[in-house]
Image (cartoon, rainbow, N blue to C red; front, side, top):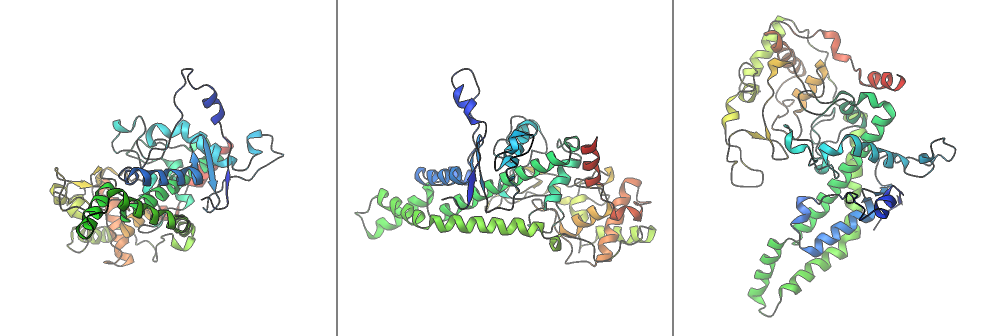
Length: 411
């Protein structure tokens, strides 16, 4: 059931017309793991809901519920592609297919053709979890955060800068990534809810076994139909609720009040602050050295521990940390001065204060004062210089991301 959505006519006709003439198959959105464990009838309900409300890669649907600029029709535009409603979504898709598909995959699942060769693996957007952002905890990133990632890339990874695309195309890509994330998380929540309602093979077998104890005449098909009938009955309301939850989450990320900014000016990065930061870094309260090691080289004792698998009683077979996506992850070697999502003091302040969502890096804001956070930042920024000096105070307020995009757009 689609709510206030509009269809976007894309470039699907040619791929259909040339089918069987040596052309590659039409791209498809790969189903999530939570969808594939459902019984076939429930899988079909998820698939049909996604196609109706989000479309296919070649025929997108813009669900107006969500806070995305899909692109209003511009009948007088010199570019004929802008004459139709939803042109920005289509153009964002086209850019994504050229620049991002090979790493992040059609569905944004991080399973593109080159992904298996990369370490770290490309991001899977479908859970709506983003590591690099200005907002705290599990909140969504702002549009500016997505722009910045595209403009600057992510140092130390294979994610490059796309600054030469210019401001408009950066915006198109950011909105399409947001759309892919919303589609993926919508699928995760919808399929996950059906699973909890008993629509997986495992849960269905348990339900059948339990019901057979009191009624020997009941059939497996009858138990399955009962569960699916309840799911179908509640589906319209479920779709509305899931969409509203995602809308609220992304709007919260755009709220300037939810961006993390220091409540105190940066402490002067002198020898005294660096010494205090080192003491905190090594302390039992903050415990930075448990992961990053006493000298900040990423070799702390926790890296030798066997980590428990999420929602399981078992641990991984090899020691070391895993991220939200189950991929191996190592603490940053802070002596190299390579910081993902920004090397400004305020960038490190946010990481120290909030932690890094989707990783084992915790927040320390509830254990220290604002001034102590700055002391830790000053110490961390001194490590590439042997602990003797840190970055200058004037860098704390710099943000050159938008300037870089504007410059590229005008070149």
